[in-house]
Length: 224
Image 1 (tube, rainbow, N blue to C red):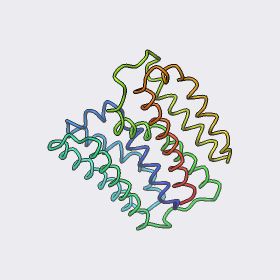
Image 2 (cartoon, rainbow, N blue to C red):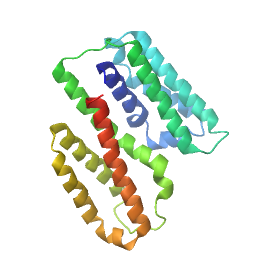
Image 3 (cartoon, one colour):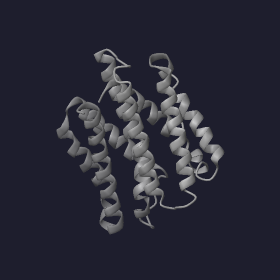
C-alpha cells in the first residue's frame, strides 16, 4: 500500500469513526443537519493534508465523502436495510480513497522509519473502533437475547484489547503466541459457552471476525 493511501486511510478512519460519536452517528440517520456537522468534523481530520499535498486532493476527499453520506441519508428514507447501506457506504469511501491515492501517487513521501510508524498507527486506528462498529452493524442481529450479567461495555473493551494484542504480535512476528490469546479468551468465557448454544455461536463469530479483520488489515498495510 502506498504512503499516500496509508496517510489518507488513517485520516478517513480518524474522521469517520473517532471524530464521530455514537450519538452523532444515530442522529445523522434522521437529521440532515447532523450529516453536515459530521462532514465538517471529517474535514478537520484532513486539514494536515493541506500542508503536505495539493489542496485539490483535500477538496476531492472531503466533498466526495459529504456527497456519499448525503446519498446514504436519502436512501435511508426508502429502505431499512442498514447493513447493506453500511457496506455500500464504506465500499464507496474506500474506492474514493484508492482512486485519489492513484491520482496523486507520490504526492506524499516519508522516511522509512516514519512510514513504518505511520503503518502501526493506522493499523491500531483500524483494528479498534472501526472493527467494533462493523461487527455491530453486520452481526448485532445475532446477539443472544438473554446473556449472563457482566460489566457493561466489557465485551467491547475485551475485543479492543484482543485485536491490539494480535496487532502487536503480528508486527513483531510472534505468530505462535496468537493461539494462547484465543485459548485464554475461551477459558474466561467457558461457563457461558457451556450454558448457552446461542452465546457460543455469537462468541465464535465475534472471535473469528476479530482475528480475520486484524490479519486482513495487517496484510493490506504491510503486504499489499
